Length: 334
Ligand code: PMP
Image (cartoon, rainbow, N blue to C red; front, side, top):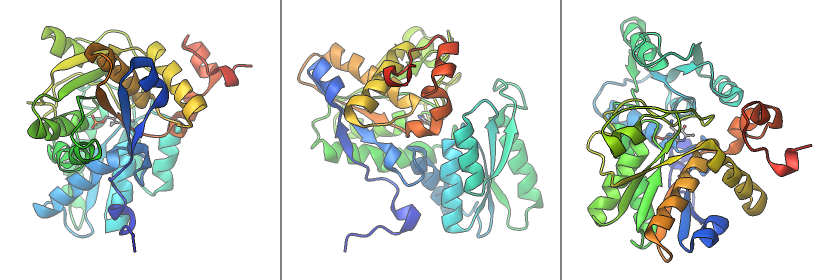
């Protein structure tokens, strides 16, 4: 029998999909790792299980314990589902600006959801900072204790990607991968996959894909953490070098605007049947830039992070897009 063991056993081993339009347009193989097919619907299931298993091994997370995290949503969904499967309660702190769909999903799966105003990292009320405070309080008051998952600075996150996502990409391409690119939230995916591929072949190019509003492009290109503009994408963009990003083997960087990413998302849906979230659009646009840098005949891999339905009220909402002066899918434009 070919059977996976429950939710946990169903995480990972996702298909690598050739993206026909982007491949044709560049003369390269543009391949998307279908992370939206993880059982919690996003790439963050991988970070969730890696962080939980690490905390169990260290003895920090005890049976019946509580997992606390600050998240744009997907890590919270992953942690809540992992928690349900393994018997841990989850308390999730999220900025109120994130999509309604992710909030609904978190409540649906039974997470204790705490919405907070979107504040900068330096403010103690910032969702990440507040989640740490809350975890410390719950560690003292909960009968079985509590842990702070700390996805940004807990390197169990990138180690999970190094041990799984990176190995899978190497195996699925028979080692014929020339470049890998993706955007950064925590940096776990870019650093973990980057490290794994470099260990196999140091010539694989690892490229940062950065949305507007993120400070990382400035850091890698000019040595200055500086953000410009903004983006409607969720879960990506970063203003500091997280511990997961520290020492990541990054060879190149591309900045991608929403105006570049959205038409690609709409084409992937209409022409190829792939309904993807905003960060996947940024990733595919960056993969095409990397392909053009390398020239025809190369293989560029990126991440298809989650489903577009998780952002339907924004990404595929003509009124919202028009209000932001962004492109609207032709078939929804009435
Ligand atoms: N895309 C989406 C939709 C996400 O939720 C995240 C994680 N916040 C990312 C991309 C970025 O992944 P990572 O945290 O591994 O950098």
